[in-house]
Length: 96
Image 1 (cartoon, rainbow, N blue to C red):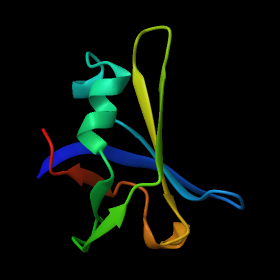
Image 2 (image 1 turned 90 degrees about the vertical axis):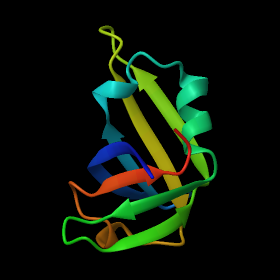
Image 3 (image 1 turned 60 degrees about the horizontal axis):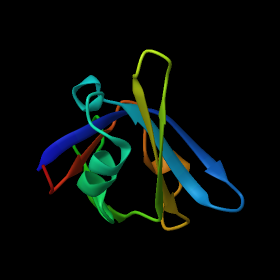
Image 4 (image 1 turned 180 degrees about the vertical axis):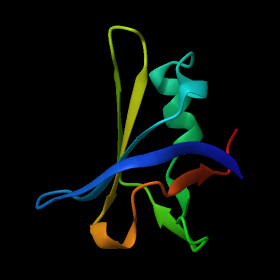
């Protein structure tokens, strides 16, 4: 598995479900499409207490700051609640 990002925020949208937001400076040089290909449609979340669970991805949103720093938002739908994903969890993907 390859580290995708550290979760800095988790929130719920009544329309879309749970959304994870994080950063990984190692991905800042990649294009939005390259990052989306790494995420594809499946991630694994490891919580700070080392619990792991796979989650299907509904959609991905990537934004870039003026300094070209990427922020990644991953919508995982309503299959998991915000309370199940603590801040500082780490998101992994099978694709490098």
